[in-house]
Structures are given as structure tokens and as C-alpha cells.
Image 1 (cartoon, rainbow, N blue to C red):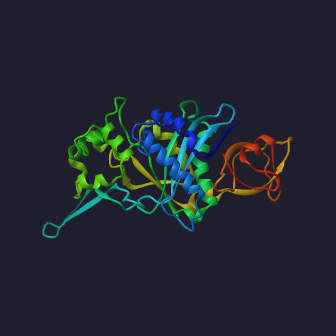
Image 2 (cartoon, rainbow, N blue to C red):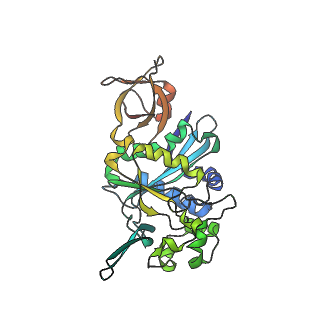
Length: 338
């Protein structure tokens, strides 16, 4: 059985393996022992903290195969993007040029450095092992974070964002980076992404231009990358799109990848979730497949289960499910259909 749970310090070696396997451009999962250790310790502190509201907390989850004790994926929620340092993006909007004498008004698409998205809750660090791509466990890894937010909404903003990794080729080259960022950083794309994963985004403000970059002046290959996601990021995009997330006017600084946005009240796993009371049992006449989580903070757990869920009645769980969720008879659980 696979279960999603909070990360622990003992997970560091396996988390390093997942970081090595992750997609180029996933800067929120750096392949660096010291940085990953900091993230784990920060997450453990966040789960232990009795927070009255949202702050700098990060909640890091891992997907574990209980039979082999192998980690097969990870995902994370940052309570407040830009809490400690501005969260920089490129705003993609038209620049309006007007001449009254010629009676001409012309819109030119432009990219502008900004930190408009600071203050939103941020989903990041989504990575699942290749054999599980497209499976119900990818859904669990991504959507259980949203169930956690739904269980503890006071810790998060009323809007949630995420960046999807933008396009780069098989050799690790990004046409967008080559046309924009490389001129200001004098670094290969892969090295720039690595540094962003290790450092804060403050250095971006120091080197990126503070005036608009006019899109028609970029090479066609770079223009085609604006809002285009990497093929290996398609699943992460699709899962959240089904949750109610939509693209907006912001793209990634390095590769032009899209940003997704949703109000908390519009997210399916938050507003369409059910609650139920546990009743242990062994004879389950399963009528549907669900994501199931407990209602805990420090001991949050989530699984995929085939169940018979009836309004107003206890939800029967096999003992193995109860053990994975760390619940017992009478415990409160949350459920969302797959």
C-alpha cells in the first residue's frame, strides 16, 4: 500500500534520490544535501508549530510504499510564496502604445519582472517515479496536499498558485532562456536552474532588466515557449486543471513555463470533499474509488481506497487502511472521489 505522509529527517537519502531523478527546471527540489536537509527540518518544524495563521511554513510530503519502505514521490505546500523574499515571475501582458495625432492605438505583448504573486500559497516539488506516472497515485501525491489545505485552511492563503516547468529540449537547452535570461546571467540554462534551487530568488532582481521585454523582438523559438510546458510536466498540469486551476498572465523567469492559479473555494478537493466517521470492517462492497485522509496536522496521512460511501453513515475501512491512515473506530476522515 502507498501512503502519503509528512517527510522525516531519516528520509533524506531517499529524497536525494528523487531529487536526482526529477525534471530539469524543478528548482524547488534541488539535488543538494544541505538544502534538502534544511527543507526537511523546516517542514518538521512547520508541522509541529501551532500557527494562528499563514506564515513562512513549508509542508513537505512523501509518498511511501509501506511494503518496501521505498519513497516513490514527493510534493510540497509553501504557505506563503514570497514571505521571506519576493517571489519573482514575469508578467505577460500587452503594452498599449497610443498616438492621438495619428489616431493609432497598438497593443504589443511584453514581459515585465514582478512579484505580484507574493502572498499566495504555493504548490511545489511535485515528483513521482516514472512507473507511477498516469496512475491514481500521481493523483494522490498532488491532490492530497489540497485535502491537507482544506483540513487546515487558516494556515494558508485564500488563493493557491503553482509553476509548471517550461519547455527545454532533450539536451537541456531552453530557447526562452537563451533569448532572455542568458544575456543577463551569462550562464547555461541548467546551471541557472541549479543556482535558483540553491539560492533565494533575490539575485534575480539584481540581474534581470526592470523594463519591459517586448515579445515580438524575441526569436520565434523563444516566443513559442511562453506559457508552454515541458512534456514531462503535462501530468502535473492536467491534475491541477481538473481541480479547477487555470493559467494566468504570469510565466517562469527561466523557461517561460505557465503559472496556474485557483481560489481555495473553487478547488475540487477542497469544496467537493466529504467527511465521514471510521468503522473498521472486512466486508467492503466497494462502489467507488476515493482519496482518503485523516484530519490530523502532525500525523497527516492519505491513501487511495475502494470504498462504499453512503451519506450519513460510517465509512467502513479494512484494518490495513486504518493502520495506514493511523485512525481507529470513530476517527474523522476526509474523502474525495477519483
